[in-house]
Image (tube, rainbow, N blue to C red; front, side, top):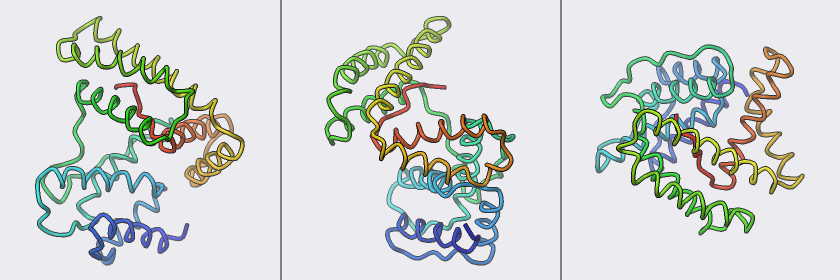
Length: 234
């Protein structure tokens, strides 16, 4: 994607996040966003970083002014760092200090993570994004997570490691069912989207590495399509 189009997409997304208030990506802001494009930061990854900044901003109470893209840079680089690590790509980007107080996203606690997992599973079922094939597993996962949430604040040592291993196993089971529900049309669409997201890296990756990365992105896109959470905690 040409840099100008990339910047335009970021500007449009930022406008929506600012409730329609136009904050132009020009001057120093254009240089920042152009740098994201040059680094190969996919638009979806940049959007997720911008979302992170706005989540913190909303938690501060009523907004005082429209958000400039400059304030989102640390979160975008943080999201890009995580994306590349998850896909086994090149070494991490080091995010600079943000222009506004608050910094990049802090790590979530295990109890807060489990709370979000249960909420997202319930929402996915209520909204009809998932079918009957998930019902039994979701009920079981929700029960197990409810029990885990009740004790997670006091879990230490071997007990904590056992809980984390169980969450990883539940996550793999949830994904296995999700993959089994994908028809050929959706599979082709998600694979195409995954390949487009990785396009900037394809020529630099061995075939097997690209396949693993594409499968990882496919799983993430599938979760997004079905509204499924990441149960694993790290």
